[in-house]
Length: 382
Ligand SMILES: Cc1cc2nc3c(=O)[nH]c(=O)nc-3n(C[C@H](O)[C@H](O)[C@H](O)COP(=O)(O)O)c2cc1C
Image (tube, rainbow, N blue to C red; front, side):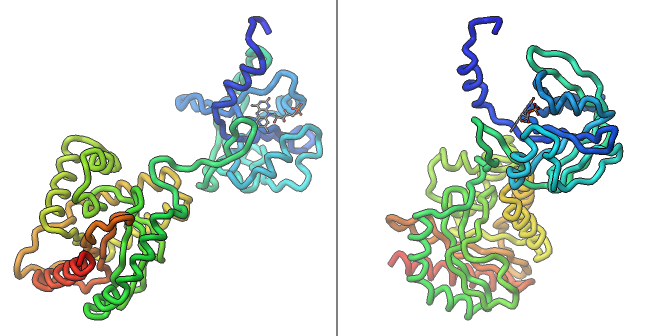
C-alpha cells in the first residue's frame, strides 16, 4: 500500500456499505458463456446511458470477459444466492447447468434475473488494483420486479422496508385478538342485523390489523384475518383521536407529501373524525376494489418500496371522500365506516368497522349504522 492504511481496517470500514449483486456475462468467440459476479455494478449516466463495474486487475474471469464484443449486466434476485455462489467461483465450468438465453447482441441473460442491461465496452481504465469498466447501454429490460439480492459484510441478505412496518408476530396483536373474542357475539349480531361485514381492528404501530370479522354481506370478505392496512392519511384518523402531537406529526408524514396544504387537509380530517366519533369513506365499490388491488400487490411484493408509494398515493387520493357531512335526503355509497373502541389497559387502540354496506344508502340509514356501532362500542367501556 502506498500509504499507511491498514488493509484489514479499510476492508472492514468499507464492508459496512451494502451492495447489490450482479453477474457480468458475455459470449466468447467460440460461443461459450463467460461471466463474473460483481458487487461494484453501478449506474453512471442517463445521457449518454452508461453503467460501470470494477473488476480486479488480477481477475482471470475478467481477462476472459474483456475479449468479448459486448457484455450483459444481470441483477440477481434475493432467491438467487445459490446461483451467485456457483458463478463466483473461478474456472470455466461455472456455467454448467445454468439457464440463460441470449440478449439482442448475444450476451447471456440469466434465468430469474431481476433486470438485464446489455452494453458495449465504452472505456476500460485503470484505477489502482482494479479497472473501471464503463459500458454503453444498448438494450435492457426489467424481467422480474422482485427483491434484489444484497451483499453486506461478507453475507447475503435482502431489503426490508423501514418506513412501512413489515408484517410479523406481535404480542399486542395476540392480546387484541383475544379481546376481540369477548365481543364476538356483538360483532356477529351487527353483521346479521345489517347484512354487512363487521370487523374488529387493532392499531399496531402504523398498521390497522383485522383481528376478527363476521361477514353477512352479499360480498366476499375482501381480506383475511390478520390483514394489515397501512395507516396513511386519511386512514387511521380514528386511532389518533387522543394522540399527542408527535404521533399526529408522524401520521401526517406518512402521506405522499408533507406540504402545508396537505397537512391542513389531514388536520381537517382529524378534527372532523374527533368531533363525530367515527370515520367513513364514501366511494363506489370499483374505487375501493382498485385500492384493495394495490394493497394486495404491495403485500404480494413483500412490501416493495415502489408498491408502498402506490399505496400511499392511492390512500391519500381518497381524502376528499373521507367523512363528508351527511345531508338529509342524500344517498351515499359507504365503503367503510369505523368507530373507535374505548381505550383499554394493556391493549392497543382498537376499532369496529363495517364494510360490504348496501349502496345508495340514505343519510338516515347511514346514521343508524353509526349509532349501532357506537352503542356496541359503549358496551365495551361499561
Ligand atoms: C458478492 C460478490 C461481489 C464481488 N464483486 C466483485 C467485484 O466487484 N469485482 C471483482 O473483481 N470481483 C468481485 N467478486 C469476485 C469475483 O466474482 C470472483 O469471485 C473472482 O473474480 C473469481 O476469481 P477469478 O476472477 O480470478 O476467476 C465478487 C464476488 C462476490 C461473491
